[in-house]
Image (tube, rainbow, N blue to C red; front, side, top):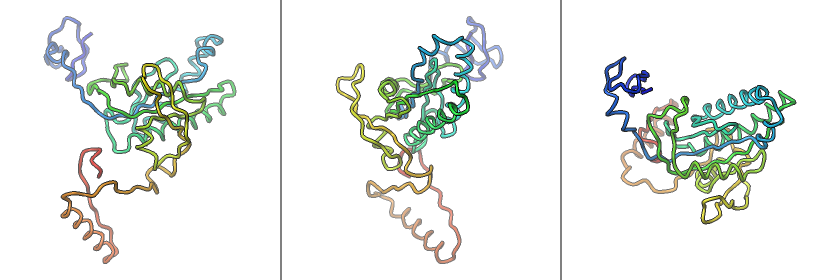
Length: 268
């Protein structure tokens, strides 16, 4: 079946034009919109799932995986992430695509820690579950398919960032979260970490530096300590406006609204 890129109507494989809206299919289907983006990948997998599946009836396996998948999806999407794919009992979440935020790395690590808490809650609700999950979090550049629909099984993100996240997941302790150096550097002020031994990953020439995420330093978006890392250049007028707004708020004891507009990642 050929899916129309304009209206998503499914057409016959031999169709050259969409039967629903009349859009051309041959020219558009061969061209996929792709962008390079910095994303954070959260790769979660159940420990010992293969051995468990061998002992259980397929219906019992599904009964375990269904609430597990639903809960992980909820934790990822609650923080602005997207479930890129389900691979058996593994779940791959992406932050930064298709929607980007300035704190995608932090969102990803917070989601990973929340997933571990959610697994503990699931185990308490069902004595037979006894689930343990390993999670790897990695941040890096990826090629993102803008038109992909993950809910239909279409791959959205490609690149080494995905492979490395999977390697970190394999090296994490049961119930643990390992993050890459790029993720650590982006989130060290917001997340408490413990040192961990570098991971020898398949396909990597050198060991990969990693850190074990312990807990958020504060509630999301509250009391997160941030400092300017570079001087502002060419922003004298903008800074004067901010100073004037602050002075007016203090003098009149009234709030002032200032809106900063810009693409994600420019340091607003």
